Image (cartoon, rainbow, N blue to C red; front, side):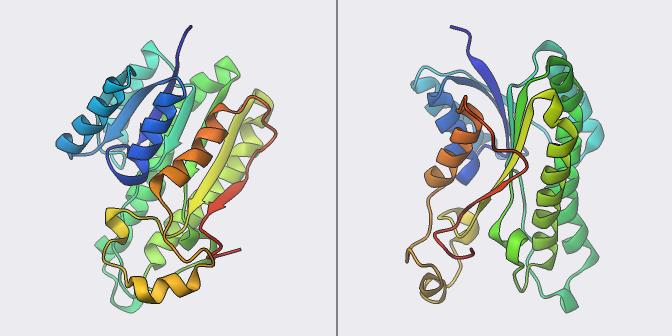
Length: 241
């Protein structure tokens, strides 16, 4: 049986790692993108191979258009991913009044420009084949806004807009495009948040897990009977409705 191929962008830690592992268990070969944490990426690769899956590491900076075009572009000429999960993202939190130009531009460049750089590289071939699934990982911050995260919220809201527009563009070519929007998930990014203040705001009274986000991504990637297009599926324990 031929295994399908999933490109997981930002797949070396946290939610990205959970997505890569879950998709591998569902029968996908994995192209695992990351920027610089080679040790973490190698760890995910070993976990996948331990479960008899296949994983190829693709280190490149998604904010660099030329780098993405060179490295990912050469790979796509050999094989087109069946699924692309855009999970990469950074946070540079600060109040807007104190936010530096670099804090703004670095977040937008990675979280939003990175989506353009990656999807631009694979989209033509997906359209030519008339199949493919694109899943962007947004955030509750992009749906509701969050004080101290004007840059991050803007970038994640931008992803939602991009997903909705792209879904309208490529739906007739049988390409499925959706977003998954996690709330507060137990990762390195949320480790320093004041849990005692946040938990009362979450109806389920706990943080989510990366595996719970990965299960929704897996559904969008694998389900054959798919009529979900251009939607944002929230995984937030009821934090925002």
